[in-house]
Each structure stands twice: as structure tokens, then as C-alpha cells.
Length: 417
Image (cartoon, rainbow, N blue to C red; front, top):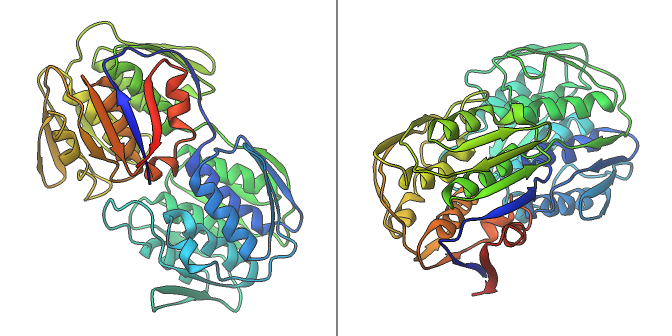
């Protein structure tokens, strides 16, 4: 086990380069299996979840050559539709292999997906969609088995907006017979990114980024060279780092349009933000104002930014309210934040945060990926020493976080527990 030791209270300054989007990459790698020839994917984040997916693809018979920020996936030798149980159960996004393998082999068997424990995240909308395309589903002994004689296009309406189901059905339907219409789709930037990647391989997908996506099935897909979009959540995290530490940071390699909801809330709090082509400058000079936040599907405020923002609200003047509309169990980390002096109470899906003058260092745990990022931000802003344990959660989604922070003059080191 490893942990971060942080000496806080220091304004961070400098520039940070944002990595490729985790949420795009974990879907694009399975999507590459649908082609008949190799794909080259670059601007890849160098994170734990990508390594897990690469291992699973190798177990399925695919060839994977990975450099730090580039991966070559050759699906020609693919000979299995059952990724290793111990690997699949470690990450939520392993469910994208269902859509890819179902499209490739008309069958997929996979362990119930794992990942962060932030509440019930059912895959009923995925299964509903697969069955509408002609598949049959059984769940037994912790395994999901989905099988079809052939996949045929259909009209599918999602009961709730789901990024995972939207992407998984694009994967399954792009080689299905006929036309598939998906309605009430997720509009997140990584949904559009995956659709663009599939289209670059020869798929016929229209409407990604809107409520309705139309997929006309094709017989074959070919490999391509593709660059993943920047990670909006990593960018948002470093924006909050700058604000929490009273710093002045240039966030490089971003798409500002993807960050509008985050920029709006930070501006409302009194943080100074300057937008350039692919760079955002974030600085804070005065006190933070309290705001209310409601997490919503894109283009609303992203649920993955809720935890980092809570740290900022804990240091703001007055009382702020966070309403979590996506996951019902995403406030567990607040118990850790209380150890550092935050004043918080939780009522169901709502957290009421009363701002304090300062946080103080303490030993805390990264209870999940984004909560881990929040604890790091709290440690950087706090007075004294903070130890953040179980940083493997952070490594799943943030590339070399301590290295990037050290380049901003943060006093943070990684040590073995």
C-alpha cells in the first residue's frame, strides 16, 4: 500500500498539462476490438484502469502494445468472449466489453463490474438495450451471460439518462442488422468521443451529443489512428486545486466548452478565470463565496466534480448546499473531511456545508477515486501535515497526480505505508 504525505498551506503556481479523458479511454479500448485491423490510440492517460483493460484484452487473445500515452490494439487474434473474472471485477468500465464482445461474437460473459463504491449503479438499462437488439441475458454465480443468434436494430428508449448504457448500446449496435435509434441518451463529451472513434473505424453513427442517436449497422469496421479528448474531470480538479490553495495555475490542453458548468460555479464563488484557446488560467485573490450545487447529466454540473468542490465549499464564507442527483451514496468521504475540521451534515442526497476559516492536516482515506482527489486538495489547502491513505483509488483515474502537483510547487510525496 502507498500513501501521500502532504504539507499544506502553500499557494500553487505554474502550469499543468491535462491528460486524455479516462472516461473516453475505458470505452474506446473495448471499441477497438470491433475492427478487423489494428488501431492506434494516442493521448492515452497513463492510469491503472487502462492497464487493467490492456490485460483483459490480452487474455481475450488480442495483441496490445502500450507506450506511456499511446496504445496499439490488434484484435485479429481475439478468441474469447470471457474476460478474466479477477480483472473485470476490479473496474466498473469493464462492462463496455459486453457491448464490444456481443457485437464481435454474439456472446459475452463477464463478472459483475466493480470499481468505486459510490452507491448502486445498476446495468439494467444496458441489459434492456441488449435484449431489444435480440440478445438473451442470464445472471448466475456473479456472472452476466448475454447471447444472441444475431443482433438486429431496434428503437430503444432509456428510462434514465445513462452514459454507460448509451456507449454500450453504440458498441453493440454499430454492426447490428438495420437501424437502431437510441432515445434519452447521455450527451457527455466522452459519449461523442466514442462515437467519433467508431465512425473513424467505419461505423455510421449520427446524433451523438444529442438526446437521440441513430446507428445504421455496417458489416465491417477497420482500425484507425485516433486521439482521445482531454479529461474534463482532471482539468476541473486542478482548477479547484488552484482555487483552494489561493494559487495561480494555467491548465493546459483543455476544451473550455466542456468545462462551462465548473467555470460558472468557480466564477460564482469569486475565483478569477481566464479562457484562452486550449488553456484556462485559474487564480484566487480574495475570500470564497458560498454557492449551491446540484449534480446533473451533462451539460449540468458533473457528479465526478462534486467531491473536489466540497473541499472548496468547506473553506467558503457562509453555508453551501450540494444536492447529489446521480448517485445515492456519494457522501461517504465527508466523514474524512470532518477529520480536517470541515463542518458538514448529510441529509439523504443533500450535504449542508458550513464554511470554516481553515482546515487542518490529519490522516485520511481515499474512499474512492474522486474522493481521493478531494482529500489531496484538502491536504494542499490545510494547515500542517495530511496523510492520504489508499491512493491506489486515485491512481485509477489520475495520471501521476503527485508529480503534476510537485511541478506546481506542492509539498507532496508518495511513500510506502
